[in-house]
Amino acid sequence: MADDKKSTADKARDTINERIIDPAKKAGEAMRASGAKMAENSSTIGAKMIDQAEANAREAFAAMRAAASAKDLSEVMKIQGDFLRDQGSRSMGQAREIGELIMQFGRDAVAPLRGDKG
Image 1 (cartoon, rainbow, N blue to C red):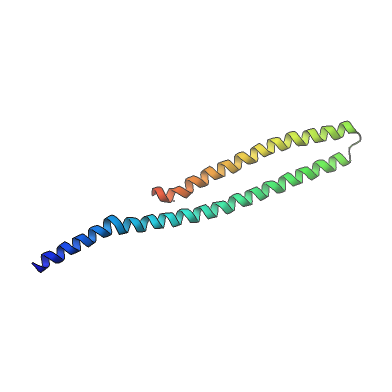
Image 2 (image 1 turned 30 degrees about the vertical axis):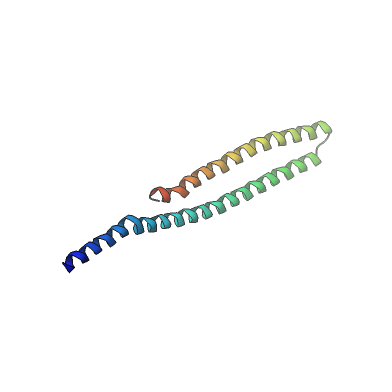
C-alpha cells in the first residue's frame, strides 16, 4: 500500500514537472535567447545607421567641394540638383536596407519563442 502511495506521489510530481515546470523553464530559456538576439541585432542596426550617416556626410561634403569650385551659378545649381536627386535615392535605399534588417532580426528574435532551431 505504501508503494502505491509513493508511486502515485511520484506520478503526480512527474506530471507537474512534465506539464508545468519543464515548459516554464523552456519558455524562460526561449525568452532569454530572444532577448539576447534582439540586443545583438539592435547593436547591428545602430552601427548600420552610423555607417549610413557617414556615407551621407561624405557625399554632402563632396557636393559642397564641387559647388565651391563651380565656374558659375548654373553649375552650382546642377551640382545641388544632382546631390539632392542622389541623396533621395540613397535615403530610400538606406531606409529599405534598415527595414529589411529589422524584419530579418524580428524573425530571428521570435525564432526561439516558436521553437525554431538557429
